[in-house]
Each structure stands twice: as C-alpha cells, then as structure tokens.
Image: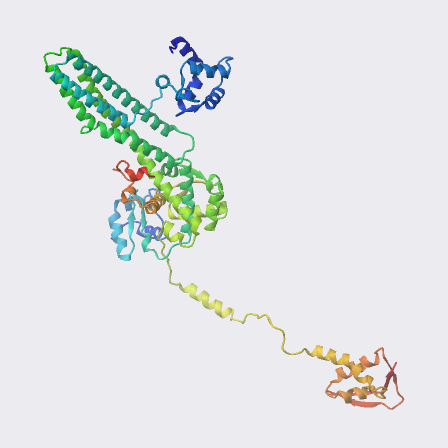
Length: 407
Length: 194
C-alpha cells in the first residue's frame, strides 16, 4: 500500500514523542503495549488514542510480525528514518561488516570472471554493486563510530546512579563487542584490507582491460576503496583512544570496589575474629620504652616509704563459726523461768541463782534475778531473814533474801 | 649518614606508622631526594623504608612488633567509603582523594548494613567515626581542615592497594589485573566475565 509522504510526515510531526518512544523500544510490542505508549506520550490535538493506533498501522509505521499477528514492530525503513532524523546512531556489529567484506569478495570473483570473459554488463553491474557496498560499509562504520562516541559522552555526563561495576561491564561490552573486533577487521593486516587490496587489483585490471571504458566509475570505486579504508581505521582508532582511558579508570575502580565488597562481606559472614590479619591495612608500630630517670625512681621510692603497704580489708563471705555470747546469754535468760518453775516456791531467789549457775558473773546473776522477779507467772517478796552475802564468779553481793512463788 | 637531615623527627613519626606525603614539607622533599640514603640508614635496624609508587614513604609494616588494634576499624571505615562511592557510580580514587568530606555527611550510618559492620569493630556512633579519623590522621592518611571537615591524603592509596589485592585474590585474577599503572592492555576475556 502506498503511503502519501505528506500524510506520513504530517502524522510524524504531530507524534514525535510517540515515535521516539516506539524507536527506543527494542523488539516486538503487543497492541496493549502500543496503546500504552500512545497514552503515555500524549495525544496530538484532540485525536483519540484509537485513531492514533489505527493510523500507526495504516501508515505502516507499525507492521505485524506476521500476517494476522497481534504483535508489531517498528517498520525498518521508519526505524532508519527516525534514527536519521533524531540523530541516533545504532552501532553496526562486526558480523555486519564481515558480511560486507564477504560480499565484496564474492563480487570480486564475479568481476574477475567477467573481465576474463569480456562480459561488460556483468563488469558494470559488479562495479555498481561494489560502489553500493562500499557506501554501506562507510555509512555503517560511521554510525558505529557515532554510537560509540555517544556512549562515551553518556559515561562522562551521566548523572543517574549506576554502580562502578555496572559501568565497567558496559564499557567492557562496548570494547569487546564493537571496538576490538572492528579493529581486528579494519587493521592493516586484517581481512578488510586484504579484500580491499584484491578489489583494487581487480579494478586496476578492469581499467587496463581495453573493452571496459567507463574510467570515471573505476576511478570512483578506487577512490572510495581508499577512503573507506582510511576512514575505518581512523574512526576505530579514535574510538579506542576515547574508550581506553574510561576503560582503564573503570576497570581499576571496579576492582577496587570488588575488593572492598569482598572484605566487607567476609566481615559480615565470618565476624571480626581473624578478619583483621587478612584485611586490615598494615601500619608500622614500634614500642618505645625509655629508661626511668632519677626523679622517677625517687618518686617511686618515696611512694613506698610514705605509704607502707597495708592489707586490704577482707569481707567475710561465710557465717561465723562460734555462737555469739549475747545470743547464749539471751537463751539462758529465756530458759530461767522454766528452770525455776520446778523449784517453786524458792525461799532465797538470789541464792538459788548463784548456787545453780556458779559460773555466771555478777551482771548475769542480777540479770537472771531481775528476769524472774518481774516475770508475769511469778510473784516475789522480801523475806524477814537477815541480809546474806552471795558469791558470784567475779564478786560478791549483799542482799536481803527474796522469796519467789507462783503468781 | 650522620648528615641526613630530619632523621630524629622522621624516625619518630615513621615508627608510629606515619606515612610521609607531600603534606609534610620540608621533610618529604628531603626524603624524596635521598630515599636510598635514608633507606640504607634504617636498613641495619631492621626497618624497611618503603617508597610507594604514588610517591609517599612509610616503614614496611611486615617488620612491626605488633598490629595496632585500631587498624581493623580504619579498614572497615575505608572499605565502607569505597563501597558507597562505587555504588554511587563515582570514580573511586578521584572522588576520595579530591574531595573534602564532612563527618556528619559520611555514609557510614546511613545504611543498617554499614552500621552493623562498624559495630563488629566497636564503632558505634559518629564519635567513634571521629576517633577513627583521628587515628587515620596519626597515620598521615587524613588531614582535618576544620572540626568537621577533612580530606584524604595520598597515602590513602594503601587502602586501594589492599582492595586490589583482595579483589585479585578473591577472583583468582592474574597479576596483570593488579598492574593498574600505565601501559595496560585492552580487556581480555577474563575482564569481560566481570
């Protein structure tokens, strides 16, 4: 179906954000995906999303992956046009360039046979095709160069947080996927040079061959061959020069980051025991001991003399072995009423006490006497007898006898 | 030998683990100009005066009598800083060596993971961090430019060296990995597998 250029470009002009979003999306997309992109990128004027969706298909901007499929992709011509308009280069893979070189080899063989057989038509066709292939190689190399430069610029200006290790992986990807294989292809002893030399030889042969007289076409091809050769080597050497410092810086940073992460992870997993020996950064340490001076010795001696050592106080942590005397005295006093009860009435209480407990001293004898005299169960009164002398363990007492009876 | 200047002061600093960097003028210039003479002077004492490729000097810790207990704290502090810078996508060396830092803005207690690691080496809070930084200052790795503000000095490269060593050991990389100085080759397949 033919598409009117005016209609197509009018639509494109009104839907730039949508087209950009479609181009940035890699691979197939479903109808739902497409409708979401239409919604997200806003609608032009008052156009309904349904209309936008319909026109995307009518203008063959989106084409189904296979007839009747619900999955779509951006039509390759539109993709290329958008890349051109939006100045977004897409890197050509080394495989594509190798494909071109193989194509040139095949064309060379064709050209050689045509020269041998004086087939001027095939010579002309081969020359045109060689010219076209050279243009494609030039354009693709140029686009790859621009893509790499864009990526380098992105590294230098990127604000969003991407870890050093992720950046390093990306730069390694660019180096490994594009720059190094491309350099292998375009270097002076690489396959491109060999094929170009052979093609140049054939072109010279065709020029020297009297029958083919389109010399300007031959000259054009020769010039283009040399141009592509020089250009490709130059741009990829430049790419390498741009990427190399980034690569080196990121590689070192990446390894430093990995070392720190390894150390921290081991600390987390194994704990600090034994970690220090393997992970701490060593620093010299030398203990410096000075000989004590005279005044230090003098001070030490004075301290000893002026503060003689004394034993430290000891806290008794176990119970006492002996029964306290006060406790025994108390028990004796408490037992006195029971002891005297069987002897009641007692005519001379003090006499009873000192005769029953001769080992008791005067204080104890009087305490026992008082205990019994003032006890609730007993009554005491002085007798009419004469005053007596009582001998205790540590002295004597003179007293009027006291009689004790039950109360 | 006896004519070597600053010997007493130099020895007094280096024996404590200090790293002599361009901040320590005029001693640094003198040692830099006569490194071999100084190294020869200390060698009979069993002390190896190391000249780091990044141009600073220190006594080889292999000959030390003991490992100070502050070193694990310094290591954890430094590794956390490196890890944080890497996760932020910053060029680690450039970022750490060319910036001034505020103690209150350090990332060490911004994540539970970091705080837990610090606690393992008995650094509990900002006061602990300040103490670690003071210890680093004594090693000549850090210079305070105010109460709160500091910057890392050139000898901090020893942390990076340790990281590279651990990284190489950890992933069994060949020695080429460690040669971070000039003349590096383009990545081999090992680097791609990073």
